[in-house]
Image (cartoon, rainbow over all chains, first blue to last red; front, side, top):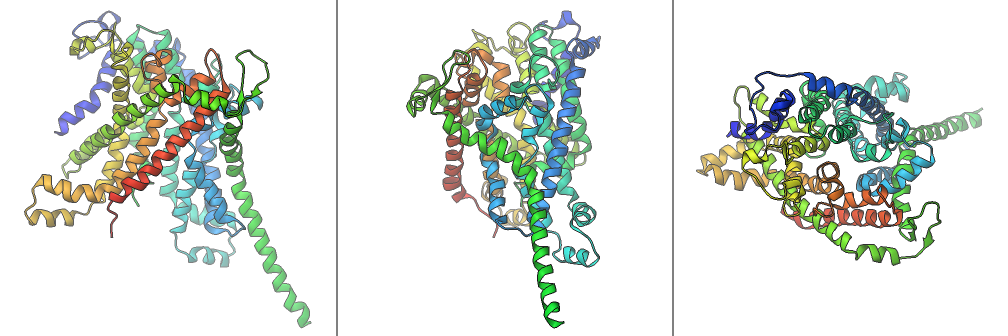
Length: 261
Length: 306
């Protein structure tokens, strides 16, 4: 049973890798070869150079770095405020934060494109990343984590002369590290795999084109060069695969955070 | 002397309170700003923009038409077809995805040596994006260089140009791409099912199937419900795979889900912000309604741990 299921999950990926290494003459061969007897690696270099995948990977990396660090920063400070500080309308404001989870991004697409264009951010990293620098879900989760820390921790720190920033970064955050790590991984995944917004905000040059949109480009320009297109998808998936293998625990925690109490 | 002493602590208290409030506001201001500009304002702006019709000629002013445009869009055959496609797509993707994830989770929920490798493999599609999955399967389903003839699938016209089968094909690609996430969520749920309850059932003589349906599934129902809601919302927001697999032919192929229709009204030959706004509001209402319906009717059958 396990093996059957493994096959179903892995076969597409296996076939992709096989096909990316085939000699071009064998590609449309019937029946398709199951193992590349003479692997040919230039599909990968073609995808990299002619397909500009190197540039696209760089753009994805920049955009993802901006979004992840932005989300982490805004979330850490906001969650701290909601968990430890007192200010008028705090409860209302928290509900406001939560309500953003009810508005899917596609619903705000039309106006956001206009806003970004008016700000002169079309086809720039600012336009690509700024709309995503905050997350209601992340704030909710991290606040939850902070609230689960021992209540007298804050008072004890205050007696020792800790101000807010010191308490946040020296005590609260290290204790909430699993949640922060989970949020970071979750955020990374979302940012790297984004498709619709990059598609809409990217202009006709390679200034900010990310690897997901680059794949679309590759598919269009390399039509029958199946090995090149598939090599491109492997290149695009590789960074995340590394992430999965190294950070599997955090990934799972991030993805299941809302599900299991 | 006492007069001054009594006043000083009071003033310090309210200054400290005010200082804390200022810090609080400062900490939440950046995300609040982002939300205001990029979530709330565009959401509300949809309602205004839906009332204006923009002519297809550039730089012409839009004119106020009130609800006439909304009525026109919502009764158009294009919208109704899109709605049907979206609902059909969701009906295929969500149950299949849940079931497949559950199957994988149950299969990998054993204390075997090396089970960790299987778990990593089952989670692996979580690193594929819809774009990656779409490009991979798009290649497999290509009529010229694809694999389908070898598998004996010789539809005419080919799958991704076939109005009868295109939606199913796109849905299956979506299910495959979502296997990793579904597996991870179901696995987490399974791990929270206490073993002693299952053992007690086994001792009482319940068969594996009975144990599954009468013990495991009820205990899993909160997770199943969560996955159902998340899965439905996600299915409604599907876009990348439609753009890459059927693209501009989506209307003809009956794969033009609501998000794609919105996209076509923003970027395409004739951008129409008024129509796009109406469609965006429709999408929001549908997502909200579906979530509320699920909360109202399905959550009743969920067993939360006492």
